[in-house]
Length: 344
Image 1 (tube, rainbow, N blue to C red):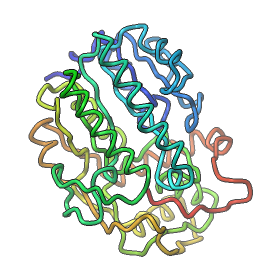
Image 2: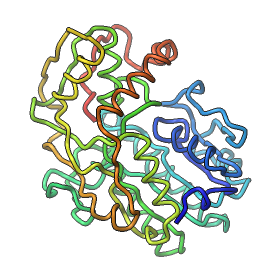
Image 3: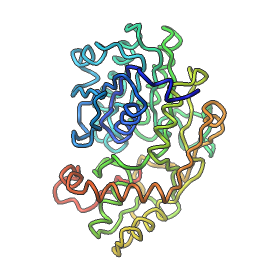
Image 4: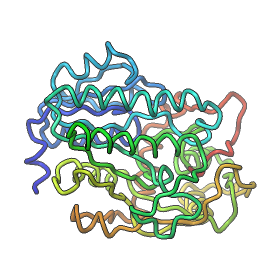
């Protein structure tokens, strides 16, 4: 199927559309010729300077739990809903489990309800993280059917519950739902912060000539996917009918060691402060892992093929170009030179 033809002239709702992945997804939809892209975001972890500026993008500052905001978002009768809004992420959910549950479960149910009764929604795509279904005992590479209920954080637990609610609305009400299980997305659009991911935090500190803190050990590794590939996978899940009712990994199929990543960033930014290894966080017990890519290749004719270092170079360039905004938006507590919660 031709993605451009499918999304052209469509009305599309992207919840969490001002976030790191959402802003790139919204921009791509605008470029593809969507009639209207509605971004619904409460800006709890996003910034207006980072929202793409296109005539066919409408931004609503609102909350997925708020009835009035949902009425505004569904007023235009969206045909496709990409649900990316979430209380992000692991350590944040450990610190604030009740807010995590309210946003990631109650908020999702409200979006599902509005989508089911709207009569306009043709596709609903729910985004999960790889940790939202794969636990300590899941086999590596992580395959879509090998899910676990022994999960390490309230965030992961709520995202697994979210998949169950999506399946319920698909089976009970016929809402055409697909699930994208996103492995570690990185790239332009994500700022640094206490609850943010490892790559933007490492780049932020390296550009200030600070030591990079690695939680865990030198062997730990993750499956990183450049954000453009992540967006491509999400778009394909949204337009391929054979993805309806399915959960599909969006993964590169290989792991990069976090220690090697840190050294790469230090070299690319000329940071001589080195790397310091700290102990594991209590909730993070998973070893090096990567995702099985068989299903994404078979159902979506898709592979995440951006070279990791090329993606890293583009991300560092974006940081340099947006440095003043990024520094103004830094989410670290005052006086904190480095955060231990960086290896999401």
